[in-house]
Image 1 (spheres, one colour):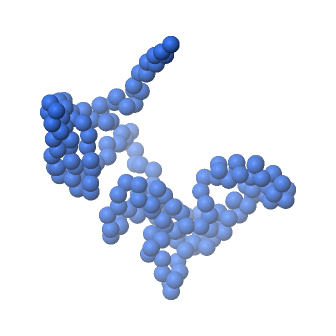
Image 2 (cartoon, helix red, strand yellow):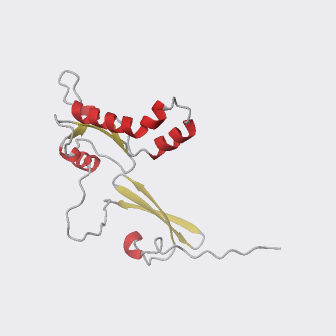
Image 3 (tube, rainbow, N blue to C red):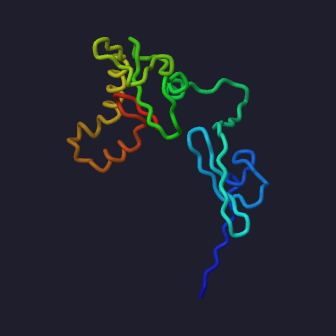
Amino acid sequence: MTEQTHRLPPLFQTNEVLFGHDSTPGLVAFEVQRDKVTIFSRDGDATLSQTVPFEPFLLAASDGKKRNAAAPYDLVRSAKRPYQPGDQISYYVTGAKAKVKINENCKLASDWDPKKPDENVEHYKAKLNERYEKFRPFIEDGATRSEELELALSCSDSAVGMETQH
């Protein structure tokens, strides 16, 4: 007995505004390198390729309001070296108060100077205290609830210390 499965494509994946549309017949694949893209197509039994310049872009819907501030985004925009999608961005928080706007008070981890430390000790102490309070029941219970602790750790929104964004 053969079982037939009918899958409808998700509306998200068929959105031409989001994913684009090209009516050129025979398009098969695209291979993106930093500043160029190789377009693979079929013409009968032949596979053709053509490499053309490429400039990545992002189309983002907006309601006219300013975007949420994001430290990794702002750091990458002003960085001295080019970044690719998927690159890891490590940064640290600067300043003197526990509550600061992270995107306005951060530097790339590679810019940290051990001779002139400028990390925000008050911010990191506050984050550590916040995490301690969150996990206090597990600590006081002598770590006998290891499954619950593991679950809580997996739900934690960020680590204390250097902030990392992928």
